[in-house]
Amino acid sequence: MKGQYFSFDAIMATVIFLLALVGLLSYWYGVKTYLDYQSEDLSKEAVRVSGLLFGPPSPSTACTSLTRLGLAISWEDQRLDAQNLACAHSMDPNRLKVVLSTPFNVAVDVTRLPDPSPRRELSMGVAAPSTSKEIVKLRRLATIYNRTSGESYPAIVDISIYR
Image (cartoon, rainbow, N blue to C red):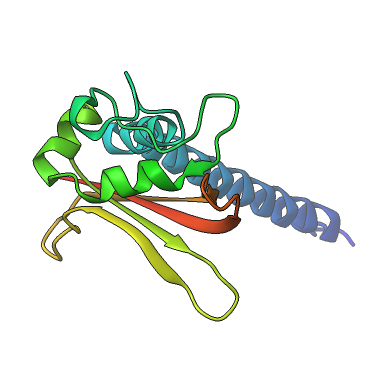
């Protein structure tokens, strides 16, 4: 038709372009927010502490001489050792920060997952108060190995880092 300024094709192309632009911008914003979150100090520290906990204790498994806390049997066998859990259970929250070399407050909970119901194996540190504004929580699955009985069972390790 004469005098028709916009055709149906031009209108549809504009709508498709705008939808694609909005989709791209929302994706970019989501990725940027996620990358900013991962680059925060607390997030990096939670991953570092998690790596330490899934390594062996240093220099030995004696509770009194620990300079670095680790719950695993060795670097090759990263199952959590029941003896290391017992050692960590008696640890003072202030000493926990020292042996993990962190300036932040740390709380670690290890929950055993037997068939009937879960049972808490370890609770270290002080849980984050409800007034804390910066809290990072990390959850990892693990296997706890009891050397005396040879029994292995699954567990959940919850790590909370907060200011």
